[in-house]
Image (cartoon, rainbow, N blue to C red; front, side):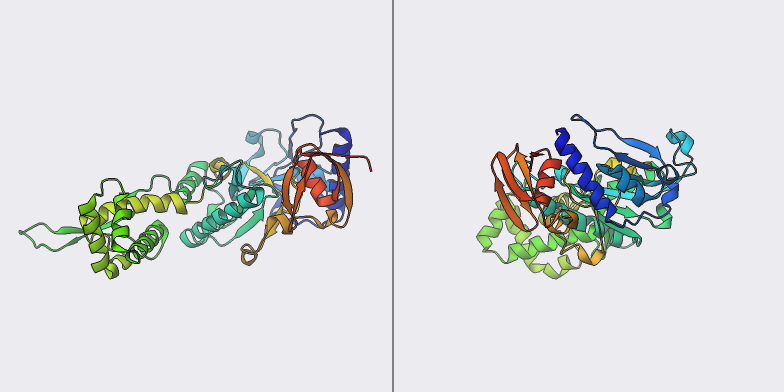
Length: 392
């Protein structure tokens, strides 16, 4: 990034902050603050170990300093401005989750567009919220579009504030489905048999009411209903694609599905040994498809710095947006996170990495060279290293 580009962006970021009202996080004066300025060269310099006492009024600081990125800590401290973590005196921390589109198993880098990556990340966000709200019962949640490649969720329920890293790792393992398998999810109940006579059989069931059992059961029922709606020969062929399921087991499993559909819907998977074998595979599929692929180190780190909602992301020029729960489904980050400050003007940029860009509801196909473009597009290209500011 050349000097002209850097100064232009720094100036326009300052204009944005002077026109914006930001809502700081709760207990803002107990948190560490950090920022990345517009420095020369390809690297970045993090300025951290600052308190609000060091920075002064937040809006005034941002308008004057015009940083590239702004962060605050998940943790609360006795002395947030101390230069070492040991000197800060940790009190408590929010539970923070980070979903990054670049790290999703469903995303194919180099093939999926930015818009497609963000759409897949929103799907992962909704799965994460299902865990946090339904499984854990958390109530004090703040959902944030990161301004870049994904979403953040801040949990501030009182019960999690003093959890150490290892306890937070258990929450991570749960939402990621780590260590979950068929035996961990099914419940066994003795049925039949009497004292002194034949041993009772074991009936295996999945929960239909909540948790991972409900997710696995839902996956199995959907598979059963899909197979029963198919032509019988096609259904048997589908079953034979499972390892260890030959023609005989496929027929037996399909027959068990047809004659015990109601039992399966009630959670009973022990309707036939062949069906149990199929269910074992389906449980693994459910865990792989329904887990929330969060960035583990963010959640386990009680001292983590996270982006300030309302600030600008220096790698996209998009706003870091706090989202109401009911607005998530309709939220389009490439439209709704475009700052109003950058709308209504055209600027000249020299594109150095051409291609297609989807932004603010339009699709732009730009070749290398000088173009006059809407400012929000120019800012996006410059912050992502795909253009430099051209003389007007």
